[in-house]
Length: 193
Image 1 (tube, one colour):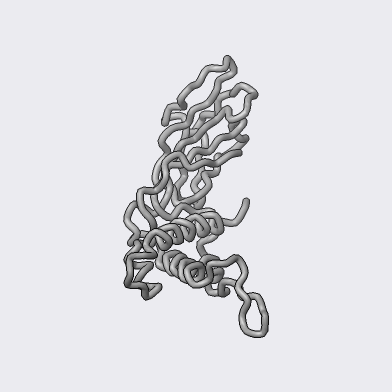
Image 2: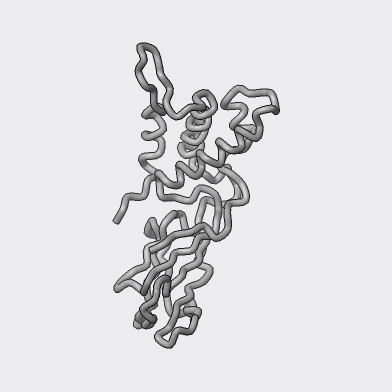
């Protein structure tokens, strides 16, 4: 199984103005740095939570159809764009939407064969099944849960103030990102199945 981002998000869950307000920064000299921290914070939260924050197109590649459901990583699911598979003759085929059902009530969402249908046979080659789909809370940062946005701001703030990999606090004790970020992210994590 391989998951790749086919189309990157067109924005971020935290705007530059929101980040600068959180950081209490009024100058423009650090804008590029802050924009990089915003991107890094989103990527870190997406990785930690196995969730897409801003709408993006993903591709899930499988070596064959599973026995049961195809679980789509990085919820929330917006839509399934296509399912392309390599048939037993080695030809690329697009699976008709009438052949499968998408269950969006589950999180992460699942794709199952339609009633009375089964998955087609595939050639035994790597990435024989490729599912392209759109996931994320939307294009509007206002649709991202506030706890996830706050976690991003906390990460941005921590990284802005501490630009080294280890920060030595008072008494020569290494300091880490506060546990508050973990607590904000916890209810949004997708646990492995």
